[in-house]
Each structure stands twice: as structure tokens, then as C-alpha cells.
Image 1 (cartoon, rainbow, N blue to C red):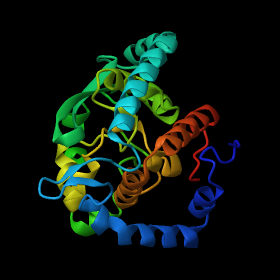
Image 2 (image 1 turned 180 degrees about the vertical axis):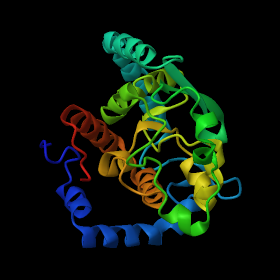
Image 3 (image 1 turned 180 degrees about the horizontal axis):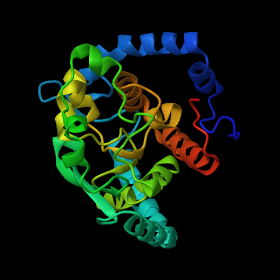
Image 4 (image 1 turned 30 degrees about the vertical axis):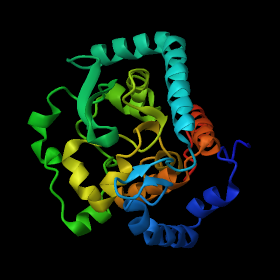
Length: 264
């Protein structure tokens, strides 16, 4: 696994760097949306009930081991970065009025809502000052090219801009993994207002635990659209296995430490 290619798959990185190849890849991914969104990514136990023995390449025992490993690594991670957590919390409080942590309702596996934790990177009254940014109503064409991280966001504080750029704002997500609401790797957890825009793919996206990092985040960082993110998430669910999860994890660590996105 080289620094240039933390996934150990040069073809994937090269595709993301080549515009024409990237378009071709996304076109192929779109062709799989229908079958994947119907749940055809595992082996059925009972065709009538729609129960699944495997999700991607994980068996039921594999799922149990993955969950156990996630919680153990997250607990170790929390202890290891506790001085950083304290420093970031103090910096957030000193930079702008309000709490150090931001909590929000997100949707987890099976459509179950949970409390999502991260460091606050915005002004505390962002929703009151910028209500237009919280109007989650989009046309079909708008959703295709929707991006959730504009180049300039007036809501973001000075410290918020730094912890976002370095991904330090997401360290409290480790608590969500320890509590069982999230995994280390999986589709990023979504807010309830945006679930309807997933259409028939919502069932598939919500069939696994959301993750701190994802294939979409690794390859595209915040530079890809809602539609592209959805396609990468569906691809991950269809192909998920221990090797892919470890590749995404190590790739994310490399990206955070170097400040370079694999997809750029």
C-alpha cells in the first residue's frame, strides 16, 4: 500500500483523476443502481421475507466480528486522542459563544434515528441567521448536482474552518461507534430531511450502519455531488469486505495526515 494509493487499487485512483474515465465509471455505476437498490447484494435466506444472510461479502459472523472490531478500535481511539479532544473543545468554546459539541438527529441502520455527535464548527444561531440554507427542498435536477459543502459557508467559524479541513470535527463520531450507532466505515449518516431523495436506494443505504468514513469521502472528499456520493455508497455496500474496509480506513488516515484527498 503506497502513499499515492492507500486503497491498494491504482485503477480506482487513476479513474478519479481522469475526467473521461470518471464519467465512464459513474455511468457504469448508474447501471447497477436498480439491482442494488432492490437489495440484490447478498444471498437471500427467505425470498418471501427478504431476509439476507450476507451484506456484501460479510457473513453474519463476519458482521458480528466487524461490529466488535469497530467498537474496540473506536474505544482505543477515544482514549488515544483524548488530549486532542480536550484541546479542540477548548478552542471551539474560546472562538465563539456556544457549546463545544454539536448534536443532531441522523438516520441509522434500519431507519432508526440516533443522536450524532461532532465538534461545533458553525455559529450557534446558524439556523436563525441563515434559514435559507436549511430549506431542504430540491428539484430532481438540483439533487443531481447538489453539493453540501460550498466553497464559502458564512456559518462556519474560524476554528470551525480548521477542524473541518483537518477532519478533527468528526472525532466525536468515535463515541457513536462505541455506542453501536455507527461503524468505522460505511455511508455517512444522513439527516431525516434528505432520506426521501434517496428514492428506491434508501432501503439499501439504511441496510448497513453509517460510518465515520466512507468510500465516497475517501475518493471524492467533499468535491463530489449528492448523486455521485450515492453511487459510491451503493458500490461500497455491494462490495464491502474486510479488505475494502481496511483500505478505506488506512486511506482516510493517510488523507487526514497529509491533507490530500485521494480523489483529487
